[in-house]
Amino acid sequence: MIRYLTAGESHGIACSTIIEGVPSGICVQKKDIEMDLIRRQAGYCRGWRQAVEKNELHVTAGVHNAMTTGAPINIMIYNTEGVHNPVWRNAIGAYPEEIENSDVTYDEAVNEKFRSVFIPGHADLPGIIKYRHECNNLRFVSDRASARETITRVTVGTIAKQFLAEFGISVLSYVTQMGNAKMEGNRDVKISDGIIEKVKFIDNQIINNFRATCKLIEERSLTIFDVPTKTQSENRKQIINILNENLAKLSDCEKVKCPNEAAAKAMVAEIDEARKEGDTVGGVIKIVAANLPPGLGSYVHCDKRLGSKIASSILGIPAVKGVEFGKGFDVANMRGSELHDPITMNGEDFFQRKTNNAGGLEGGMTNSEPLIVNVAIKPISMISKKAIQTVDIKTGEETAKTSGERADVSAIPSATVIGESIVAIEIANAIIEKFGGDQIDEIKENFKNYISYVTEFYKNIKSKKA
Ligand SMILES: Cc1cc2nc3c(=O)[nH]c(=O)nc-3n(C[C@H](O)[C@H](O)[C@H](O)COP(=O)(O)O)c2cc1C
Image 1 (cartoon, rainbow, N blue to C red):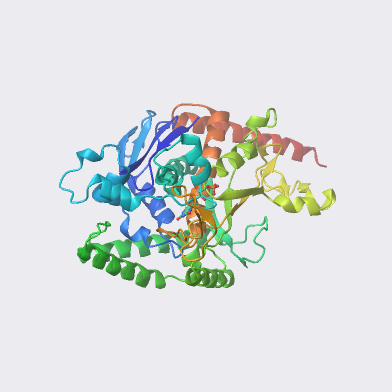
Image 2 (spheres, helix red, strand yellow):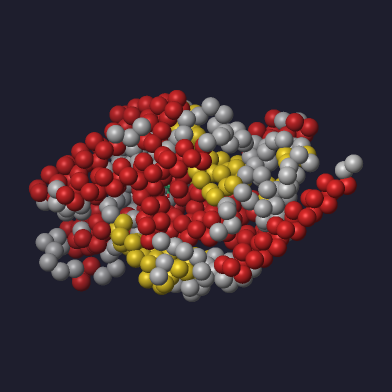
């Protein structure tokens, strides 16, 4: 079983993950992890932070010459801003007194980054009570509650996707709703033709666009961390201009990671409007896993159901408020006779279903149809202009201060990559659980035998047909 633990704060030096249980012999290229990190970071709805914060990836154990060895994998992702910026290092670092050549004192830094007004919807209020940060600095809660930590889960997801590719299984994701802008049939369980290629194309464009931005920043020698000097703030303006100019070159579909042009146009308009108003936007993402064998997961115990594992892990993503499989909440409006997917003998190697309303899961197990997961994500809590009533923990005063520090308009396109990673990890674990083995060829051999059995099973039934 793949297990992992993560550490790291939003503005800290690094986020790290130790991943245990990855079989040996899986090819994991550094560029594959980096591409997923870019897919998570880049986007039209993100704030300016994506332009100043560079992820520097170090895989320090468990991989040799791009192949997993079976030993625990250690992945460190340095946040170049956290590394270079003495203000952040002083304000939240482990040993601020070690910082040399800084013209910002510890007290000045803490004071600059001090946060005492609860952000409604964030972890501030219950978090500061639970962990008794008597300094009243909400920063110590929000920096860990922040979704920056999800970069670690994305790295585990890249490894899981590489593993699944060995079995011909692919996992992809896209945005189907943003605010009131919805893709037609956004909760459909049928995946239309060509969508996989379209989503891949969109992803490539996003990656190329982000790389072009980074190249221009580098060519113009603009430092990309946030030291509050005059030069740096001028640099930051220039960086944001480059970022915005490049983002404007993307098509609407690429801006919001939605393969439907009409819906993408409406989504971009929704973001532009929210940005103008200084507000934030929620939405729905769809994750699809294709080419699954039947029988992953189990019905024999509640914690072995694949649906329960996926739902639990998806709900571990900050801001996720709902998970549906297949028709999801719509099952309540349907009669049994129209909901359940008819089984036919039309398939070549396996039964064919006329519909996939179950979203690929029956009895907590895959049934060989594509796995369809819809995920509802709330609008981000840090809002740049519109104020929500709240309280200042230091003074006890009620206030309606805005909380837009570095806020994104929406996390929805980024969340696609995170959700996709989580689903990939859970499916990889279901494969490891069913087919065992410490090394990839061993697992593949067991998998091949099982597929032969499944095909034989079907052919036997088919042969009974007159
Ligand atoms: C990719 C991503 C980016 C996010 N960015 C922000 C952000 O910029 N500001 C913010 O307030 N919340 C952001 N969030 C959501 C918060 O992390 C989340 O709302 C908070 O931790 C409280 O957890 P809860 O919403 O699950 O209750 C983001 C979430 C995701 C998935």
